[in-house]
Length: 273
Image 1 (tube, rainbow, N blue to C red):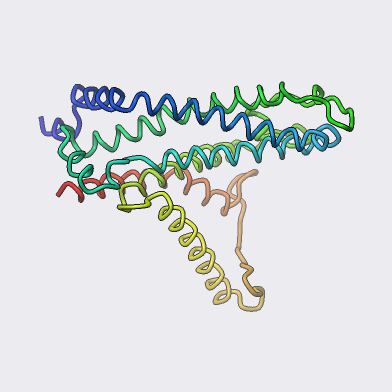
Image 2: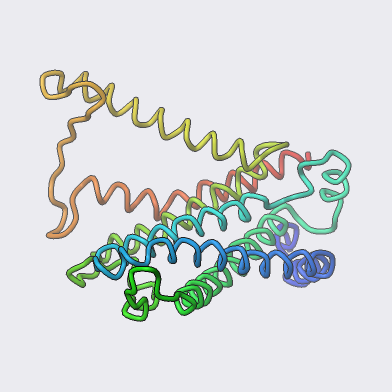
């Protein structure tokens, strides 16, 4: 069947087994190293912030949020190092000659770096930050860190009034992180060397260009209401809890990962040509 030229389950399974056989030690040490480093840094940060967390409940959410944000940056770095053989000419040639279609090679990296690693990384963070909190001792102030609640992911979407985020905000957060992960994965196929650094720089440049474009349009269409680098946007309510601008960002997070995954496929296909 023609579809077998693109994806064959048996061939994909063999490709996965080959990758795990070659890199299992590296993956295991990477996971253990991530857990250890995260524990040490999280313990240090919580220890420095514990008095503020005890005195002010809002600091608990902020501190845990900062820890999670920094941790996800580290997870993004690991995702951005996908397709490691593409950074070297000789390794690239051998990698492209491996049995397996372009789609299977892209899906393999997606499965390992996002499908397997991200859930494992989230479990590691949950365990490590709770261990770090349990390790806290009273400081010079004598305040008892036992009153600080243990971390749970619900704390990331809860404010001081214990109100959970709106559904669209939660969906936006999940798919926004997912789409950015696919973006980093695609960057590993787009750039030859220093792919992660170039991908991050490209994301900053794209963001600045997008902001500048918005400001320019705002100055053109609303010259009297726009000052400096500010923007004037006309929003309207789509639903009771969702504005047009919020809907735009929600749709962007829901769909952009497909675009980036397609880029990864076609750039890898281009290298094979």
